Length: 250
Image: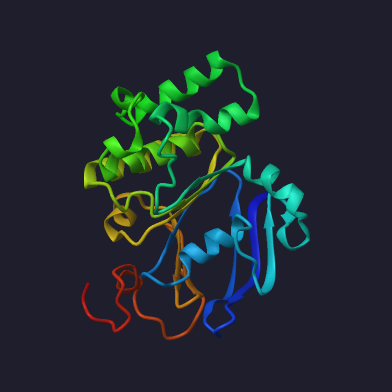
């Protein structure tokens, strides 16, 4: 069964900008998929549509088998409870400590204090920020705040992780650690869709990669299998990943 099933997805803004022109793909249960492409290619818009933060203007999107076009507003919070979301910006509550930021969703779910402490403390340790449990976001560096934002999503033990450039503010070593943490969760059955334009990460962690450019899915690449080209006459994969569309060396 697919956790995500997207067919003919389109998103056109009132000013005529076509952020997504025609995208179709599926993500299977327990699959780890990279979503890549240059800045402005449509990655963030796609993730926002999957979260029902934006409405599509065409096509169909199924998340856990539920048609987002037919989903009532009252059902959206329940859908999101099974999705761990990591945005480019941290969206941390400045008047809450690191521990409180990470525990917020668990409190809403009504978990016991003991279970909340177990989950939060475990993720804090895994991310190497356990010493900041009592600190406030303003006291942390950008990279440390990003780790808190990642931890806040992971602590919910979601069935699906949607990550929009989660390593964008991190150094190379920590970026690898974050992907390895996603891999560990994926090995336990969590599906992962991670947007990134970092070609070094794509090379270090060879996985299925959906490449989009100018709102179109141009390539579906799976390690060990021939890439599926979605549009004739496209340049080589690595040129798009590097943000180049003229065929020049990356």
